[in-house]
Length: 194
Picture: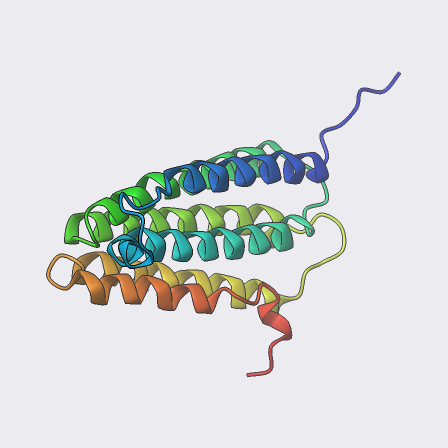
């Protein structure tokens, strides 16, 4: 009897569970205001802003993750370990989100927030390398490979710039991180007409 092989679908399902847990951890960090008036919510703007951006990032990361894994023919050891590395970096998002909120977007917290996304993108590149750049079955277009690689490299540089800028101008650093979110809203970059 043949042993059951681990499929890319199982890797994707496991990843979905991790993403759900990460989002749950972020939600649990949201706290209501101490006062009873609507105006008391204004004091919570850093938490809501960091939560909203992180939720948006997690949505975009999940969509891109799902898009990449559909190209994986099978779950190789490299794919599995690349995926675990990517999920590890994603799992740090609730911590940095909470720190950004609690410090009202102070420089150290925003810098670390940007650096976590550097790690998310580096591990995403590793995942792309294994799922897309190593064709085993149906070949993936060269344009898709190039676009994914270029977009990841550009955002890694932008996240690094955001981490440095945040040391002196944390709001500008945070805005740079948010700008990078827009670059990932379409996982099918090869289908976008440039």
